[in-house]
Amino acid sequence: MYELNQVGERTYYIQSPVKIGVYAADNGVYLIDSGNDKDMGRRVRKVLDEHGWNLLGILNTHSNSDHIGGNAYLQKQTGCKIFSGGIEKCFTEHTILEPAFLYGGFPCADLRHKFLLAEESEVTDFSAPEFPSEVEIIPLPGHFFDMVGFRTPDDVVFLADCLSSRATLEKYGITFIYDVAEYLKTLEYVKAMKAKMFVPSHADAAENITELAQFNIDKVNEIAEKILGICSEPMSFESILARLFIEYGLKMTFEQNVLVGSTVRSYLAWLRDSGRLEVLFEENYMLFRRS
Image (tube, rainbow, N blue to C red):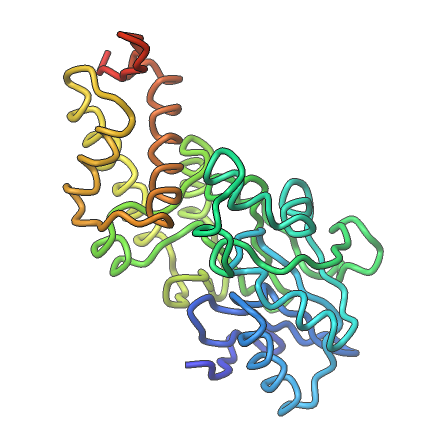
């Protein structure tokens, strides 16, 4: 864990719970994401110091806490730029937005911790002239609002969270998705992509990503069918969520409630918009039923 792996002439990643990319430019290095907290930031800085690398900037794929948690520490220690764009930039600058979005209101103390609430940092937009123009920004919406990946000049593509490993999907079943329709489009796009190497944040680096992308697509469709089966009779959101927790052997906690609950709401919205679910209101309960 935390070893540096070279995947291109100038491209590396640090093996950690969230893979952190390293692109070595002529006058310093850029990180791709920064890990989940300041402790990870310290580990990253140690790796950079061991190689005599000057940190120029951090390119954030998206604003989930496990990807931006080291931002503030590294920025304070080195003065590096942090680059993001769109809604992700706002969430990175105002990190209370993540737990508030997930909870659907002001998040109670059980949700205001480093796994959902990173320290805020000062962010520069991708459009700024300081952004390394030789790095390609690849839109990868679906998992989160404006998530992106990056292709370095070595033809190494960092895929952020648009893919989960087989092991993760087989163990947990349901992984976080914000927009199911866009997520499926992204997976189809990624499935056809070509690169020297692909580096997903939560799966093994690989030269070919097609099979894993299809496995993720199949899992989305499996979950959708399970929801439709549960809704063969009118069901409330809470009942659907509880049934899915039982189906996938999950244990309810505050964190799981908001992460899986938000995802299930996204599935319900997608199935409703595509005409496969209808909504009923009975005795002031909102109920979902298969069309």
